[in-house]
Image (tube, rainbow, N blue to C red; front, side):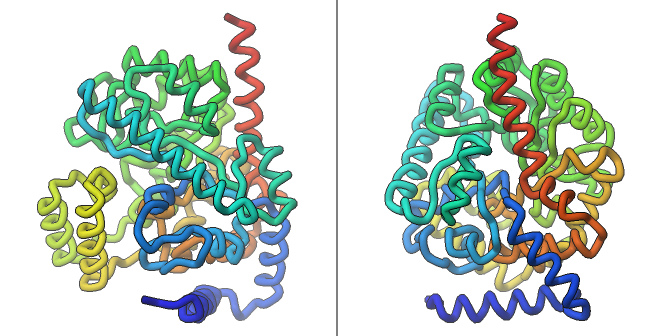
Length: 417
């Protein structure tokens, strides 16, 4: 077991190594530090709630960076003011029983988040608006927002959207890695089912507009994306996606989608999961080990580990860590990530991009392994000539603009009805 002192030393060594690329220009680093400290920084997607009930994990203490990426101490150290925690469920059986279990699981995750925040009121507080976040931030506490990942969590009952909203959720990702009853996914191996939104999906879009709940188009198919933008009366978000022109992965957005998103007034939040940042082919040995791992546990993908029983999850995580130690993965780095931001800004402007790392759901870069290293991203942005105002927009300004617009939009939707 690594103690907190060892973790601090390890983190310092990693941080020093990652700053090596800019250490020859201390003035630039100092400028970046000041900008980072003064900006209100928000990461719009983390799967940390999956860890809240794991034995040995304590969100109020610094945890092993090999097994978790987010906790309140590391948020403070990395200058991260706020974060969206995902009420995430992998895609399960699309049956009455499957939907019933999904809804129950979603509510239990909301309960876990509420319990953690109740037990640590001096460290963090729930926010549902940008003004909430700014108020909480002034107290020195960390800000926690809630998003829902995968519309499977509502079953076929639209009233669950209202209930999720009342529990604090301010966005919902319509699907995950497979099609559901709402829409087609960008990564379902069986391909498209509806060629976009289903009839239920159209109702979901309308209801989310009514509630003032942001519609998240990360994970959805291209056709679904266009259906959503066509139907929505307010801007939409991609809470954790990238630019397909930079990394050709179905999870990323094409240039035409990015232009459409800008016309819609929405925002793309950059995912820092290495596979979506840069294509780096793993070794044949690692690929075989991962294939054997998925087969052993009957999983479609690694993130589906969350659907396993508690004891099986622990075994699976241990096996996965062993694979990582035996066959280390080569990760993209911060420069690769900012290549996406550069492309997006050149294509559609500075007002439509932010950060949604997908930490605790696979997100990690070679020199941005967890939230404690977020300053490295700001250093790279300064190095490339982004201004203080630009960086403030990237870190929260653009996303908060959309949050406010969607919230105001619910009044217009109700008035039209």
